[in-house]
Length: 259
Image 1 (tube, rainbow, N blue to C red):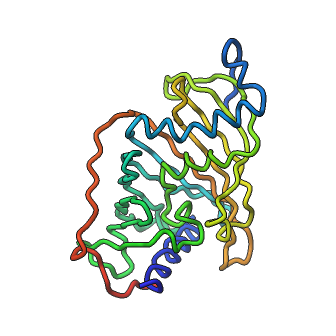
Image 2: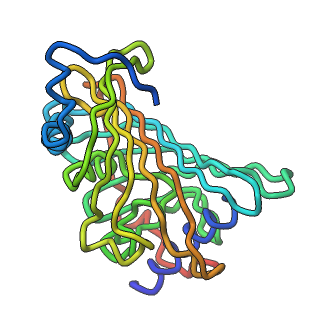
């Protein structure tokens, strides 16, 4: 089982490797965030505000440059922060020839597990593939082609340095822009080239994360070098209904995954 999950995660990561600020004016109460220590504390508290919000819609993008071409994998869906359950439809880019259109992969996000449908690689269309995310070297921050929205926000708890850059607007919503670095959890750091991760985060007036962009550096085993992946998560429509049902055992594929 562990070997099959490794193949699944490795295949998606390999697919990614192959396929693949605005600063405003500050003033008033916002001026308090200009001090680094205050900005760090604000960001540490940000993930908890999502639990209070309950749920939201989310869009994700993961981009990297390979062979002189920048390629982006996009996702869209919903997330329940209290239950830590989400659903994303992830669209892979076209083949390098531009002749093949991939069906969107449906991903169900759950504590400790990632379920994928329309995975390909010999998996029947009506079956799900289950991946134990605890066994992934990157904790599924990169492997699935989309960063779990709650995990993306949760990385802010590891913020070590941060600067408040001022107010701006995001999709018409007033937000505060922060830039800093966070430290990856020890459990996933082995999958990356460096533990320190630069980020830009945008919080609304309630302290909820509206946008976060991370710059991950991970080791590309095939090319024996370092690959930089930019992961961006947008959160909006807080309180939207979320109905995520995990697949039954009989619907999970137990056969061999093609390399």
